[in-house]
Length: 180
Image (cartoon, rainbow, N blue to C red; front, side, top):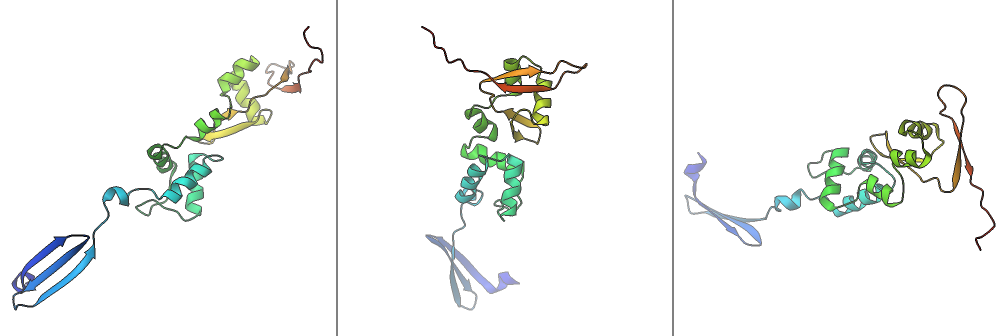
């Protein structure tokens, strides 16, 4: 039906798209619309969101960042809520260091490194971390963590019982004498 009414349609692609419709009776109608943004720009994460993600990663995991962004009302280009996977994608696309990389650059140690330093097993390190004897920072999925260096301390193990997992950390005495 519409084909019987319209003679032709002309599209001109300049700064805006101009549409000219000529009807069979001789009447013409013209209109101009904005060009659609390229898909790469539509899908691009807003710079304010990227800087907020970078700021939040100093103290939070990907999952915690996603929860916080959703609480603040931010969404991705499809108006979907953020997830840990989407945060990881934004991090990768924009070259932002992960929570793990940030903690490692501050000198935090893995469980294996701290276990070797204290001459105990990794399981013991993780147990002490859960008990609060060691300060730890979570970096992923609520159980992956890095441990703050102990500095100049001496480990005193509790040797009673079958599983000697209790320990006390005492500041190492410093000698006031220097070498001559």
